[in-house]
Image 1 (cartoon, helix red, strand yellow):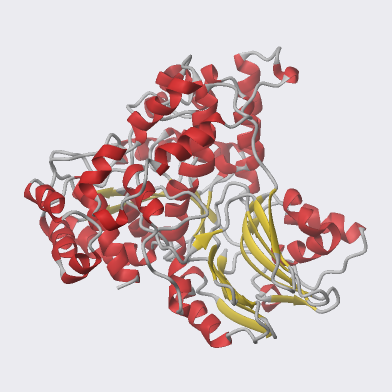
Image 2: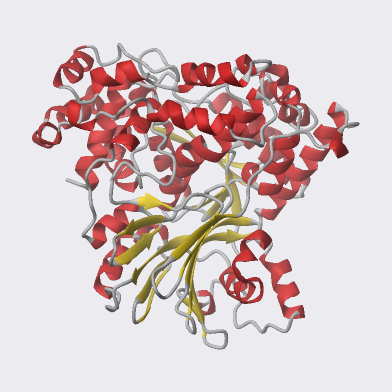
Length: 593
């Protein structure tokens, strides 16, 4: 788990190693254990290292294999690297390290771009071929690891974070109106390849891009889950599905123990992280380190779920750490969290993850986390109403439950120069949900959320906040074998028992019932959902200051209306609409100016 960056020129000039060095400096938090740089004419790579596998200098990056003529930078973890290494050794390859990075290099030499289909894990990597000048960029199937791009006719720069590209300079920072529409309507989700800045794009998940020496390039999507029933499962009972999914989840959790250092768990007190702890206990893990965070109450809302995480910690005898955060500390942490955001993220728990990661990183470098279970196993409230609904009605039902604003409301929020024609967010959802490969409306919504919303909200949030403190977060519910199996599972089994029925049935075999049967909770951060005090002051100053006035994103009368009643308007997902505007402006002022 690290931070990578680099530049490829297309006009015959050498790569700008000074610009790459500036990007490396920006990536220090993602890789506090080491630094490396490499250049060869038109290509330059930079890297910051978080040492998790092969802690020796042999595992450093950029990794150069002189014998094969390959150089790579890599961010992530390949969980089956030992098995792949043994297979490649059988093909005659000799290894100089024990790292998963070298397995990618050798695997690329042997399988070419199809190496990605052999990798179980989370990854973004870039490989340069010395003899052809070809450069290959790749991102994992579920987009767990980011890869941002800033491209002009003269060059392409890439980095693990958007702010690193800005640090390199010469980026078009104008607002992308379509991305702004997505941000304001789709709960801050901006689907790849867009970002809110016109000059920065992101490589989509499950994508390999090949750039030839002459600058021409091709992109290929190499994986997608099929949300359809299969003939071989026609005779399966509910119990058969539960058993198969339990085993796939057990394998996913076991895979994510691969490390040369200890692995802990972020324990929210919900079903998902509790299942991870239960499975690890069954795997024989003793003295497992678990971590929970809680905040002061605000506006009548509770700020912690310690009652549930304590149940799991006691039941499995974990080495449990309760982390309490006061309101003043939360307000003080906002600046760091916003600085760590590769893109503006409005979800309340982004600050919680930032503070949690800070504390956890003081005692451990690797944790498992429960993100993805709701999107993969139908845990959200907007899935049940889609059962039995035709595809033509499903789009409207989904948008009504999830979207923060419709096209009419957008016109009262956004100033004229940033308005879009039509409704690009609704058009995006309509196209995605009508595409082949999903059997029912529920299947289509699960696919949309797993491939789009999950990637650019929960997963991005966890990556950004954990890596800002040099903490590697692994997400077993996004093991691609598990996701493929869950996609084929009949929707009614996932919708059962109030949602995540299959997981709840598995949970009843190993974890206390009060954790399973509790009301569904979200990471509670009351001081952001209910704006007051220092947090409200920050938002007010951001939206009324000179930078905001000059940028002119929002209609002044709408901003004043929200400021007059800071907690009066909430989205269907209970997000504070004033916070949504304020967070975007705070992010832009932090990263763009």
